[in-house]
Amino acid sequence: MSDRQIKISIIVPVYNTEKYLDRCMKSLLGQTLPEIEIIVVDDGSKAVCAEKCDQWAKQDSRVRVIHKENQGLGFARNTGIEAANGKYLIFIDSDDYVENGMCKTLYEEAEREHADIVVAGYKKVYPNGKEEICNNKGIPRVLEGEQVSSVLLANMLGAPPDYYSNDYIGMSVWKNLYSQEIVEKYRVRFPSEREYISEDIIFHIYYLRHVKKAIVLPDVFYCYCQNGDSLTNTYKKDRFYMVKKLYLYEEKLLKEIGAYEAGRLQLMRTFIGNVRACIMMESDFGIKNHSTRITKKRIKEYCKDRTTQTVLRQYPYHRLPFRQRVFSFFMKIQWENILFILAAAQNYNNLKNKKG
Image (cartoon, rainbow, N blue to C red; front, side):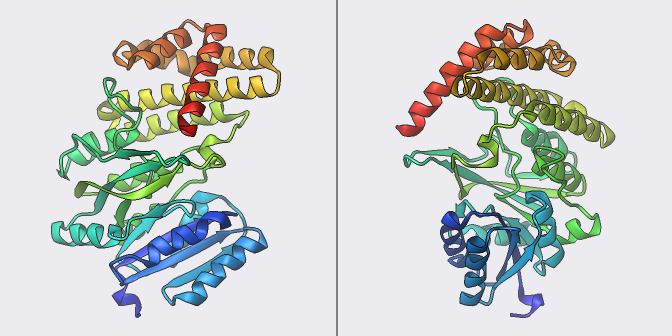
């Protein structure tokens, strides 16, 4: 297939995900749109995973493998962008998989509507077989001009105060289709997640400012697998400070492009949710490692932090769902003992629900 015939370049970063890779690759090679290329970026994986990547390239000429030193997910995606020949880009995580009509549907929508981005739904898939559908309910199908920032970007930043979940559209890139022309013309790239804990939303802030027309679909194609060993589930001692750094950087970027007022409440809710997640991880870590005194001290520091207190004073947390409202109240008054107990109880319930 010549470069001109490639309609979509699918970029798949891989780092030691050999136990999931076959499932992912089968779903991509089974796409009903044949004019695709799959760029597998091996980000310094161990030999067994790197070899599995090469095996897939031998099976299908549409698969290309790039081996590189480990630099993280964001930079691996950038390597894929540099190598892409398609008119459009799709990003897939190698421990997930997709339905076989994803590429065809997103490509045809982009072509028919002359859209710069097509956003689809996704579903969370749990180890016990449970699925949770996220299908962009309530978002208009066509967004143009100022609506791209005030509706699409704002709701990628987070959910409105009254919404039952923290995610509305979701900030992840892996369920969408992007114009290669915009990415290259404006040199839109991912930062390192080692610098900013969520590289996807920063990519979107830079990308969406150049979008004239967006299509938002309720169709669900992407299967986001809730693997216990994913980066989002890994305890990090400095997670709070990374969350805070991301929030302040997003705030700065949004003010620069004139989108802050439209997305400030969504941005704040995500920050509050991320701090709550840090507290829950601290509680879990403290119980497992018999270090509750140190854990409670850290929880106190997170709540006392100037940025946390500023957000909680400005945000209408009384409009949040009940459990989040209660948690936010105790964060505001910095009551670390109660927060430790609430977090432990929520962790227990989450574990029980995952086991079914």
